[in-house]
Length: 303
Image (tube, rainbow, N blue to C red; front, top):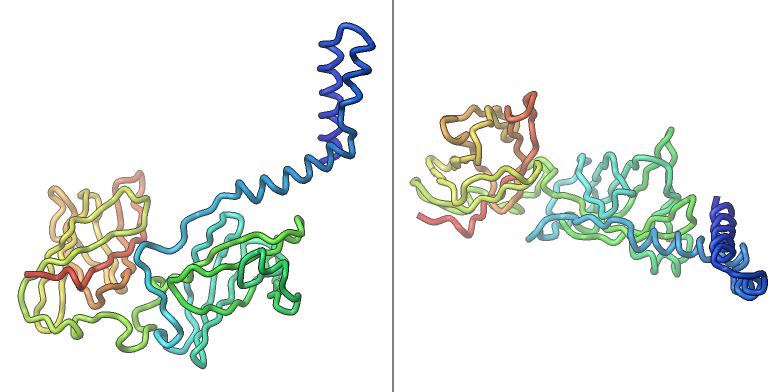
């Protein structure tokens, strides 16, 4: 295909020169400057490779203000975890995080079989590294998986991927998302609980940040936080009245009002953590349950 392109380009250049020349002598003189097919093929091939590396879309990974969590922050076990990838060409369809002996490893299942090796580092480092340090793909049906070490959750990790077809290393960045783990997966004392804050019964204000969905929805901040008998309830006021229920920690919660905005009263057991929630919207042609996270900032709590 590349040779055909190069030959077509050569003929195209010749045709332009011929059409613009007044006589054969001009054609002969100008034609001497035309690149050979082999030269054109080299240029096209080099340009394609360089262009792909330069223009491959780089996506943002993680979230602002995230703090790395090492293995001692997570209880031993195997968990489903979400992984952010900086490239749409490096799609991870599922991932299992294994925590054991104060170490973490992740088995990532890819969307296809296009990558032959991974290297935990940059593409430049991978090219210089010994092949014994490469992580080979494990083929299963029509997809492959890689098992990689994870130094920390909620931290950008360099990962180079070797393309089977291009025979080239590509730079990727990965973030293994701590907020996709269940709350009971975290070691005691890792997260900020209502007990650790030692708040007296009463009403407070707390800054809350919504993330997820299309980015169009929002919630009012600060939110009212009511503490009673060692439990905290937050009043969540959405930017529309089209939400008819929320799911928080597995519990389905109905709104207390939908007059102007959808208003919910939800339990908050953990602060300074992107708590996963779902909210069902009726604004579309059919109702849709959308995944979000809510971050309650404990440092902002005030009377």
